[in-house]
Image 1 (tube, rainbow, N blue to C red):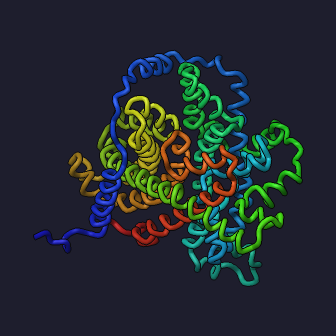
Image 2 (image 1 turned 45 degrees about the horizontal axis):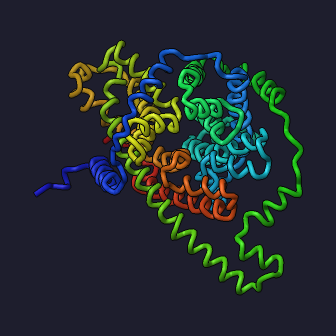
Image 3 (image 1 turned 90 degrees about the vertical axis):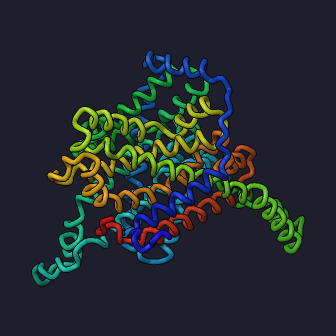
Length: 499
């Protein structure tokens, strides 16, 4: 009989995770359909070895718009997030922020497109809202970890602002800046992805090139985007940011005049169900309107929301399990004392590729190879998120001072290094689970029947009421999953605990 007392907390959590992910993988549609993709893959490979950097018109402008949307979105996000982080302990503020950040940037962009059209306002707000509320949560958590006794050592009569700046901010400023830099890299990817819904960023040309089979052009765009992210520490210097901001505002595409009547019509009519609109017009009584609306809502939940939730959770859990396996298998290759300089350098380049290539493009390639099912989407999500987790976890592992135990190869790594970094790695994994749920939105646009697929379909069919309801359901699912992940981890315990 198995002695469960011998199995530690992290081992139990890992076994439970694998069991849950195995069930999701078993329920998922992972059938491999042979579609003879080799001709198309051959053209894609030929495109990647012969990239055409001159095929895209306005390429420099697309690169700059990607950066400028990122700069403006992150700046506005900080303006939103920093004040909210100071009152994030209020339940209503925390709940509102959780709801807003649970909705993917793509959904916000689709919503603001109806209000502002293909305007810079759409792209900047689509980035600023989810990133601002994410800043609020993370900055609040960082500030809570600041020492509380430093203010006692300050001279008497020190004003409250100075006490706050020197007593709290000074201790955690490096951590705040490091997280802001990390979110800037994430926002670069999000800015490119906004091109998939028509914004003038690199993603617009990237999606067009791949859909039209112009793989030499697509390869050039992808290589430029990877280069943009890989060289971020060199061109994004702190002293250059004011100049970048001025240039971003100056070269921003012109904002078309906003029609207030159209915005009011969208808010007062378009997003309401048919029954309530008929009641507003006086064609139905309140009782009949409510009955009609409830019938519509029931049909929407049964035909779209519930199947979408099921597909979203199955896809996300399957991707989570594959992500964990990839991280566990590839982490030793990224640990420099174990793998050596050559292998470690190759793994660094591989991780850059994994975290830089949008999931949409990865899923497109896997779909050509494996056929239409959930498997390409799972692999795309797993590769991208494993690249991010491996990058952050390997950086923590490589900062540990080497010891004689490390000379024991994998045994030394498994005995000393892995137990020390595994709690943090699992914390990152569970945090990325919330992100994976949000990222299923992009893959829904490829035809995977997640909630993102149904939301995109409702926007395409000008069924704004259904899209709004499904966006709200998506947000609630993400909030519940995040709460469950925090409960499974035990909030705060992973920061000081060894495996």
